[in-house]
Structures are given as structure tokens and as C-alpha cells.
Amino acid sequence: MLVWRTLLLLWAMAEATKDCPALCTCQALETMGLWVDCRGRGLLALPTLPAYTRHLLLANNSLHTVPPGAFDHLLQLQTLDVAQNPWHCDCSLTYLRLWLEDHAPESLRHVRCASPGLAAHRPLGQLTGYELGSCGWQLQESWAYLSVWWDMVLVAVALLGLALLAGLLCTTTQPLD
Ligand SMILES: *[C@@H]1O[C@H](CO)[C@@H](O)[C@H](O)[C@H]1NC(C)=O
Image (cartoon, rainbow, N blue to C red; front, side, top):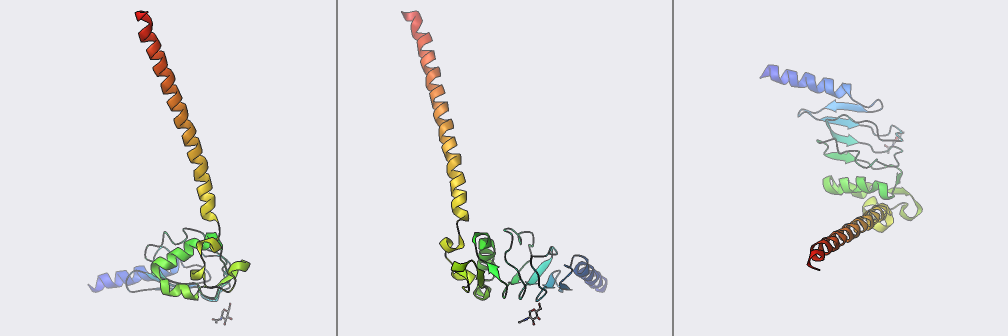
């Protein structure tokens, strides 16, 4: 039992130092997770985070945006503090907002936007989909194109089918004449 605990502790310490972002401090939790503290380090972009990150503190930095999907590989992530950053609240920040809504809705109140003009000084959680921007519309537009092509394919197949049917009718009715 003691051996197991010691091994676990050694593993956790190794893990905490190995993948810790250069500007952050990492601390191993007792239950195989990491406390990653990057507060007030002047970060301009999200650092590469260790896979076992459980509590991530990013407050008081210069972060503008979070790439969509940035936390998807952090399966243990539970808390995320992103307050006091100059967030640029356009449609690409929808990912961060949805992540916080799903995992830590209370912390969403402390996330304020710095830009663009329409969103400045407002909490990210209060912006409507319209105010966050038109990512969704672009997506719908490309899907609309796809469905126009699909319709054309269907029409072509139907015409081909009719032509074949007509041909078939001609060849079967001719001997009767
Ligand atoms: C924010 O971080 C800066 C360093 O980047 C530090 O000097 C300042 O005290 C911090 N402010 C707060 C409120 O933590």
C-alpha cells in the first residue's frame, strides 16, 4: 500500500514538472490531476497544456481568444478561470462560452469582453448569438451550396432513370409493331 502511494506520488511529481508550460507553475493533486497556475504571466496565447490538467487558472493575462476545441483533449479539466483578460468576443469565442456554460456556468459572469465595439465591457455570457457573430451563417451557407449540388445530382439521376425507362419501353414495344 505504501509502495503504491509512493509510486503514485512520484508519478504525479514527474507529470507535474514534465509538461508544465514554461510560464506557469504546476502542482500535482493527490488524485492524478494537475493544478496549473498561469495567472498574471502576460500570456498572449493559450500555452500547450498537460493532458492531466484539472484546474486551470488563466486570469489576469492578455488572452484575446481561445482556439475552438482547445480544451477537448483535457478530459479531466474541471475548473477554468479566465477572468481579467481582454477577450475579443466574436464567433470564435463561442467555444469558450459553451465550455464554461457546460462546466462552470457561475464563472461565466466574470468573463468580460474587451472588443469588438458592440461587445466591449459586457460579460461574455450575456451576448446573444447575433452579437457573437456569423460563424453559424457561413456554415449554413456552405451547407446550402452542398444541398443545391445534391439536388442537381438527384435531378440528373432521375432524368437518367426516365431515359432508361423510355429506352426500355421503346425496345419492348417495337417488336409488337
Ligand atoms: C496581474 O498581473 C500582473 C503581472 O502581469 C501583476 O503585476 C498584477 O499585480 C496582477 N493583478 C492582479 C489583480 O492579480
